[in-house]
Image (cartoon, rainbow, N blue to C red):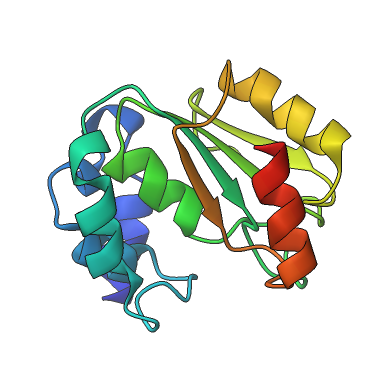
Length: 148
């Protein structure tokens, strides 16, 4: 699995395997995310079914842990699973996001209106999909919900 992950990460943006693989397989291949362990792919497939091939604006809050400047695998997952969508990740910690022209990053606190305004500008409007995997604090989730 590790060598397959390395090979897939090196595939050019024109041939992303995540566009043809089931979401659960894509999640496991990219790794570096808790989405498979928590069983999220089946829920994402259910809720995102009608969005898969549309041009969406996707906002993901929380795109990696504290210890690394690399984003988690989730931005790669959304880039590939939603191949016509623009994706913006927000995180309080700086991340080195180089995932193609459709994927953007905004550093800041998820409760900041200024951060959300920058994210919405990068998205080109209000998000169609919001994935809140940020601080996991109720007050922060409520603030994010109100901002988006």
